[in-house]
Image 1 (cartoon, rainbow over the protein chains, first blue to last red):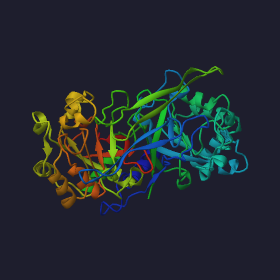
Image 2: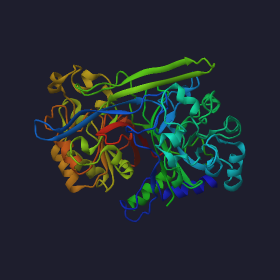
Image 3: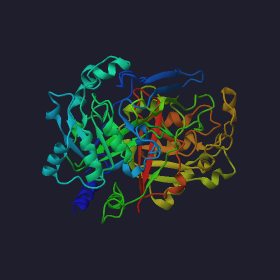
Image 4: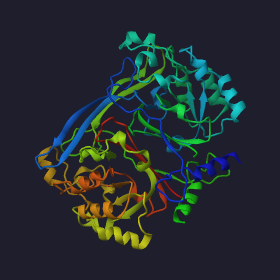
Length: 263
Length: 263
């Protein structure tokens, strides 16, 4: 019955806009993606995003033309971590079934817990507490964790804990993530499609062994990182469409992720 | 009534899979995207896609890790042309409203017309003939042109007309596109969200002035190029979700485009 209710909500929301289709009142699409530019947040050791100009201006034939080249590390800005990023033989970014990237989604809000603790790890208790209010996390759900750190983006010092670069900066990273025990609880007790959050990594900044990555990715559950605008989403009752750049053999890549809200 | 019927079809298709949600029979998601790799088709003058390894193997901490860097010109593979690519001051790729990238779609099949004519231009007559069978192209439609050239991808010689590179190869390009007169007819008589096709450019290979680009882009109508798997779509009754990489100020970029079919 819950599934049916969700579907019926979608009738009024996807993919029709109120403006364009007379007589149908549509839902709002929320972009959960940061734009890629020189300020895009990358890991301290990674190469940032670059856009170089091939041409920009009026051609000798008299018309305007602009074209650029882009380059970056896979894991920066709003991006997807493929299971193969930390789990040998698991899905590369082009191999993730589209069905895992489109589906009903929920937001687990741990803003308060993170407010004075940039090293906070989202716990089993946080997930269970969400379920007490909102019902069990259904099979096929996309889980989004809202730590509140999105409000700092792209201020690296506040968002990452350090604005330094290079290997020496890595121990200075402080931002919340998912507790490996909670990652294990999700893989063993729930059947989610994917997980995402509003920090730079599904493991907290102080992680050294990236256990949550490894636990989730071993089960082919991808992660969305540096997800934007989670403060614009309700706890449940909306859907997520998360389409990564289809890089053959990629361990991840730029992600365009949107939510379709109930009106 | 047609809108309502379309919405009702979607009830059964978006975004729920038959497998994952018991009791609900869902629609099929079709990936209309080619993967990016060394064989990805680019314009003869453009730099191709490169994936470089940052790390791949077992770290000194004992777990597997892989990460890469990517680089390419914006306009290759399955990608989006932003209006600013040919129209000064019009939308950059990050500025295109999401509503224009999600919506009901149609396929205009001109496979037969292109079979023995790689210089074919999709005409007003082709569009009107589609409408005679299927009804008027509704406001807010995403129009996909199927020339049949998708079957040649990524064989550059067959797909582009030449596998040579550099400026001297450009006059040797032979593949179908949209007649500028048909582009004008669409902008003046219909109100479409976006247009796409299964060749490398919305103007045919033999175009020198790129009029269809300029006519469409001047009206802020983006184009999807090198779209895959159009042979798997019906003439109408499905939706398209086309999410480009959000490059700040980009004249285009990698596009992940999918169709949601009626079951």
